[in-house]
Amino acid sequence: MTRDRDPAGRPRNARPRDGLGRPLDRAAADSAADAADRIPDDLVITGAEAAALADRLLRDGRPFHAHEVLEAAWKTGPAGERDLWQGLAQIAVGLTHARRGNARGAIALLSRGAQRVRGYQDGAGSQAGASSQAGAGSQRAVERLASPFGMNIAFFLAAADDLAARIERDGLDGIPPAELSPRLLGAG
Image 1 (cartoon, one colour):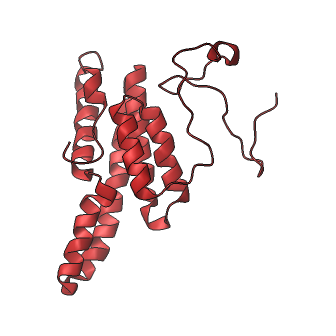
Image 2 (tube, one colour):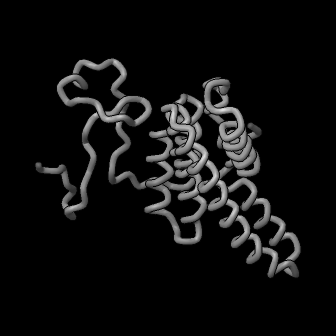
Image 3 (spheres, helix red, strand yellow):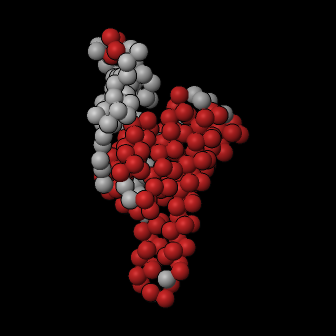
């Protein structure tokens, strides 16, 4: 079996996928109306672009594709933002599992991702708090932590936590698809 690889030898996944990231048969994908646009393996994207695109994909019910965008930001962004992007990508995977009907995977990834984003906030927040004598400058740093790149982190984490708790308590059956599409940007 030969795998599609990039020039550096890393595996790529050029196989067509549906809107929830499930692989499609190559022959069937040519005629499949639901074959979704692929996110390039080598995507390089700014934080603001990643936040905006991931938000749109999440609201469109395409969390797998949002995960790929967030993963690109995690892999190409600054080291200090890695936990933020990785945690957000894990939440998107949790939403993907929920949409696919995998309650256990949804709970695990929603919870793990939310915890990683909280770690980003705690780690960066303690650095901002350590320079509290800086006055207004440190207040701006704290505000950036709450909404980096316009993302409403508090709302998004609350949505992930609430969803994980509801799935654990009641399962996936009673959760409307709209509640599996939380906003990442703005007021929620």
